[in-house]
Length: 218
Image 1 (cartoon, rainbow, N blue to C red):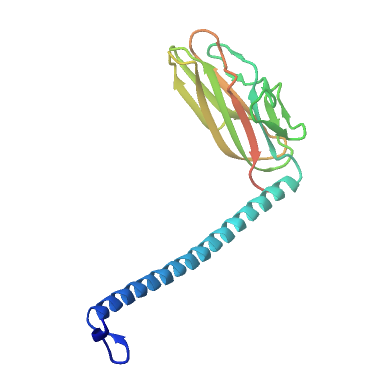
Image 2 (tube, one colour; image 1 turned 180 degrees about the vertical axis):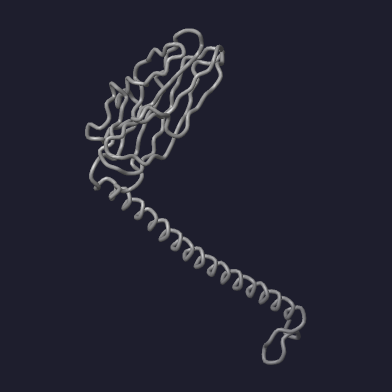
């Protein structure tokens, strides 16, 4: 062993190989540790940037919602049918019997602008609104079912949806939606029609909502 030490105590022979291998391992470990540290720093920076961006988006969204709610007039409503409604054959019928109670998420922040008994929403602030309706019928295989959004001028606004009859299921639903520019005094309601050859009842899963999605006009 003593014969393998020379040059001031530096290892030679197989000790040199062992020392160099250990040095390489230490160097690799140090290199990987530095890479890991750099990775952690980059990850922290990235997370900070993403958090800041998302936080700003959240703040902007909250600000927009506050602006809408602080503006004059109603923000909107979302209601559901808590009772069934009879729809006569080939008869255009306004969907009524709306409620904000009964277990489903619902609300009315129109300040009296929405009448659940008649199904009409009367606009008190000119603005852009999003109207969404979902009408569900008891299932039968005969004829068609259709639903549409209607305005105070008697016409269909935007989209309407029509589906054929079907059997073997509990109910059929039709979804309609439209962004609307509404003036003061305009009304919005949801219509339903069917031609099964007999009366059909709506299902209590029907929904109706109108939300203001832009600041008041003017």
